[in-house]
Image (cartoon, helix red, strand yellow):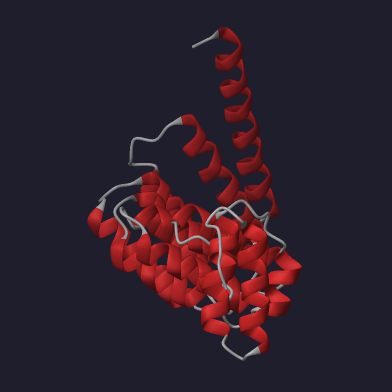
Length: 241
């Protein structure tokens, strides 16, 4: 079959012919050429015709693969969505931003199955407090809260005294019902230099903790302090400080 490289219709037809011959791997490559030649992605057609070969059927750039992953999550194709994100990671340089995107996509889709794997891959290469926090949240949402706590501890070892990591650790302990561990973290935060936003979040977490512990008066006071800090932040914003 003679093909013109800019003729996406010809590549699409070739993909269909190859599928009829039960050659899906080659069909996926032809479908990719059609997309590269200007064909608009039809996600329903792609997943129907090339199930199991979807990742190979799109242009192999991290951006296009992450876009595919997001779209696949949107229609409930969880395994293929994460496979697309994993392929994006393999092709990415640097890798950490794409590892973070992989975890974020699964979290946003409430897709628990890929979360532990995405979290393990992220924490292995994390290079910022934000990456460790995201990995911890992914572990927790994926049903591995102990691994989430270890991700926070690993992050604090790499970034001692980081307030964002400490707050995330307290939040995870509260969610898991370990109020003593959360209280210990929040009490240590009082000795760390923190901005108004972090202080507000700490008071909000303390209010949640006290509510769960049954101390309604302490919870009310913590919420009041959080509101006062929020008001101060708002006043500073309006005054341009």
